[in-house]
Image (cartoon, rainbow, N blue to C red; front, side, top):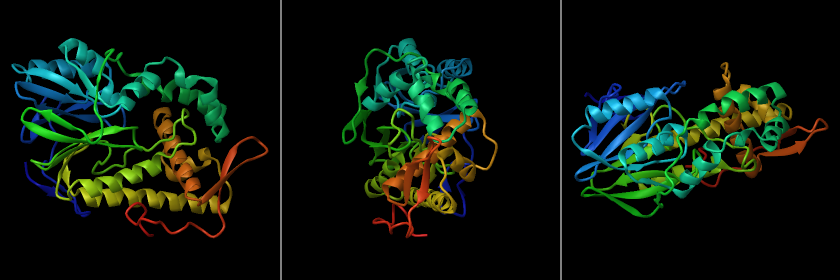
Length: 364
């Protein structure tokens, strides 16, 4: 397919993705297919990696009937005649791990993933009602969400997190810094945080491509969220640190093969764009909190002006919270509890300090 470029300097070797149930060879020995998702982000990329006498699978899609039907069509169609050797899962989000248990049992293959992905899936997705408990409801209300909105988030917004089949009882842990051998090729295992704890990425130096999962995507910023189980966490700080690490360890001309949207060239440029995007959001939040103190819930419509369904609201609230937590740590904002019991953020006098690393937060 023809090369396509955009004004930001990224280039796209493939103008169109594969159709549902189809595969495209995106790099030597790497097949690319897509699984539909019933959300605004309507797909997830799945990859088949040459593993000698078969294919290793990278990621799965969510657990629903449509996804299972697509997998059945793939296994009886373009993947027929060659076995599946193992399943690698990049991170614990349901669009990537949702059918891991089903596929491993159906194909009698092992699961390879990070410890955080395995345990995170069990804790978040496979504990019925875990995120609906009172401490987590209180978390949302303490940061300005109304009781009605909390009801929607906990009853509908978290439904996506439960679209996961039970995991296999055992797994093989993949650790950043190790080497994974698939077929006759070696992959350097790296991990990144912010979007998901210990998200796995695979870099093949010999053929210069980078299976980046959701850490670097061409046209959207991966969701960076504070969740109720870690209310004081700093996922945005971790994500910016990960972008720096990627720029230092993966060459600029590497083909990026992501978890969503199209493969692209321009890795370093995209890392800087993503950092700049979050820096711009921080400036918007600082300006709003300089006008008056605000709860996280009051910051959400400042960052997200469109109408949000409960699924989107849960992510928007958690992403706004990630920016607030980061800015508190950077001493741009300060927080206090008001007479109504709600936590509000206010801009500190004197403005934001100058960043130590311009790659992480570009000067404005």
